[in-house]
Length: 227
Length: 267
Image 1: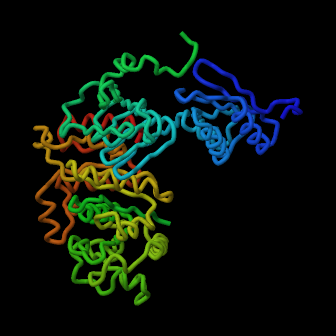
Image 2: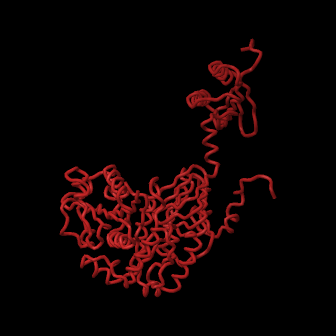
Image 3: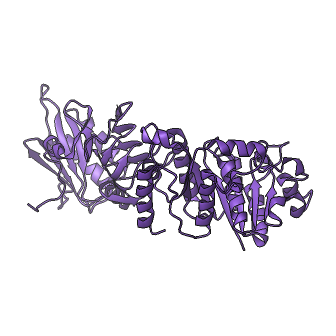
């Protein structure tokens, strides 16, 4: 070890725990070897120490899932260490595309009729109505510029922050993440224009005027700068 | 080369067959050469409404399976010299005895000789529906101002819009009862058209004479004075491309609204 000029594993202590910086230019097996020896050599633990959270930073190296598990295993073998997260500067194209999809808005001009299902990844902007028996599903938020009379499901893979807004909100039922709200058996004439459904502080879906939404989600805005 | 129009609705009992019979009759009255096709195999009715029941020798399935030539199966309506024919459905088998490709071929052949092919579609969205729309160039959706019929019409419009060879469907609202409209007990015409968001091609008031006429085997469109008859004749003229305002026999206010809408729609 002493012969080595460059260190492949650097350990830094922060107030939240330890951060391991793993070099990204050496081979993976070399890295593991050095990690192993560093962790066993340098640390003497007290019996009563509580577990130490470790962040692993892999720089520009992309790790496969089984490689990540290998590192996790190696580190957790050292009794007091717990891997908190593995951070990398790089992602695969696939992950990047998924990330992009989840954060983009799909705009569709169409009437979703009885029996039809429209499903998108990310946000959905529908210019048209959703008729009774029609369904729209999005992993993000849903905006309907028209009447929502069918079923709408926002945040289908569990995003409880997502919401549904419609020019005319008369759904047969709406879902946000895993919460369901059934519409009333009969809608009174017209009601309010532009309403918005979201999960409130009590974990239940509520429908309110869109103007009220900002009071419940002050940190919602995605655009930076501006005003 | 004529054009094929399928008359469909999804729900049963809204007046597909009556509409088919009367549009066919009206088009023939306007001097067009028309062929009616009944695709409701196993539950045929169009022949009864047209009063041609006793003159059926061969039927649709016979033609498709090659047991006879098309012209042998066509029943001529003598009231119209040489302008109105009916291709009746078979009664002894069911919808699965023909497939959409056969229907497409058949309609294509008939289009060479006729100005209009009116295809009467069975209720439902299964095989019978698929057969009926196979050869069609245009579609007319019939509905009544009832929620259940409008729901089914919505579903059917969705299916028709997926078909690339069929133009966007047009809507007929059938069996309107003006006194119920006035009292707000029935969906009004505006409500139906906004809900379905397709072009309206005509409205027909509910009339007892229609039932009487179909029992006699004489389509109501033969009566020049009946209001339902006039409505059907107007629809036929609109099919021919004439711009005919919605008839004034309906509730005044609704008529005006719909008329303004029609003007705005540019038709």
